[in-house]
Image (cartoon, rainbow, N blue to C red):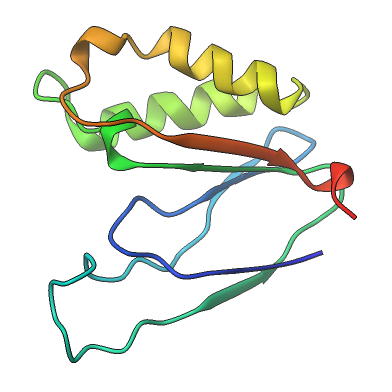
Length: 118
């Protein structure tokens, strides 16, 4: 399966391989409206079978009480340790693990397992 995505300033998608390896998919662009004349890039990647694609907004990991890199590393560790979990369970686990009271921004996340797609 081939994934094509643009990025409007959100954190890059994370690919969780079936063996628990976590990979950040490079390709971040400026926020929408930040530079009207800037062309947006479309990134592309082949996705392996039985991998989970995890996308999210910055509201999930940007917090005043912890550094961005630390929260991102914690998220990677959580995803690696639960690589076999069904995508719905993975989303619930992430939301339960990152306390909502620390979110000062909207949070949106999606997890999709590649073998569930046609």
